[in-house]
Length: 248
Ligand SMILES: C[S@@+](CC[C@H](N)C(=O)[O-])C[C@H]1O[C@@H](n2cnc3c(N)ncnc32)[C@H](O)[C@@H]1O
Image (cartoon, rainbow, N blue to C red; front, side, top):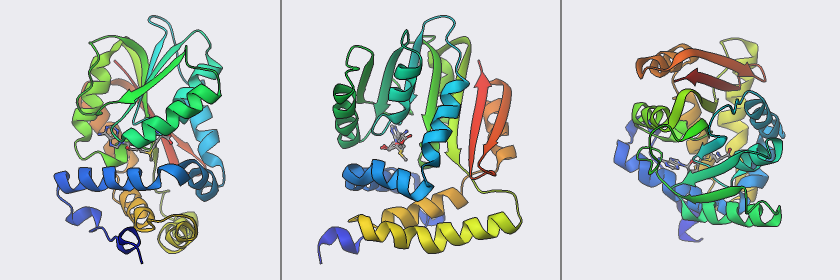
């Protein structure tokens, strides 16, 4: 058995922030080649609809620039460039393997003049204040221990009245659907992932990180606490995913 198959991660509640950052880098470096397939498969292709919904809420009124944070293999960045051809798109991620995979897709789709993906850390962005109309992070904030810092960076780099968007997997309200969903997350998802990935522990971490993510009310409060205005949460697919939007 290879070393990677024996991986086990501590539970999210037991990890220190530094440990978590290391584990997140390790996880995404290990699932790069199967990432897109597993996203579609494990979400029943809902991830495509959730990103589409995010794109439809975007407003480009000033700089006509979009920053996709924790861009991974660039799906949100690519969708944005295809929906809004006049917009220049930048994406950053702190796992170079994901960025490289994303750039292959940008090139295959002939979008090199519109989309640029590069290495970057969400908690320390290299961009100047007020340089984008919209910034978004899709399925990334869950993995960042210092969410306040990441949100503050997002607010800093957008123009006044610009949009901060956070798309994230969440747990539905208590009830039958939540019971079924918890069974899927903890029971089925890691087993399904095991069939396709060298690192099934990554998908145990996924379930754990979703369960430990702040509630909708708590997350909206966090957005407001860093000075974002008109903050709202749009539940998607019965609350399995939530789109948060706030303005500077
Ligand atoms: C679940 S993937 C989401 C990728 C993409 N946004 C999507 O919609 O498929 C999470 C990504 O967040 C990245 N990430 C996590 N923490 C980060 C940080 N502090 N800075 C930059 N990227 C980060 C990971 O490397 C990974 O590629």
